[in-house]
Image (cartoon, rainbow, N blue to C red; front, side, top):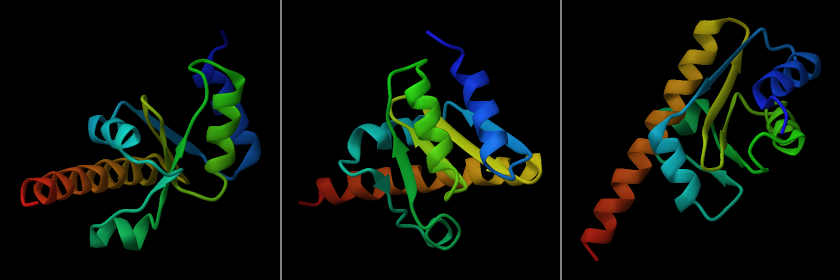
Length: 123
């Protein structure tokens, strides 16, 4: 097993203009990674739609170079990603920008979770 965070960080800094990276174990993002059947999550809230458009859900074995590469590749075109069953990574030019993206992802996942839960109850 490799140091995924270290390997990922090096790949990310080499492959993009990102100067800040945040990794979070965001609970609603993890839940949505299990629920979502596609390779990305499309936010249903207006803020998520406007700022995020879609959030890739990346896969790969925990601690593997494959996961590190998949994450770095997805972040070339997206400000943040959800790592299946694990959490989120977000980038920015400054730490605050990466933090805002992290909170936007978690907010969009939380809204989507509760809306879909309510829709199931009304069926």
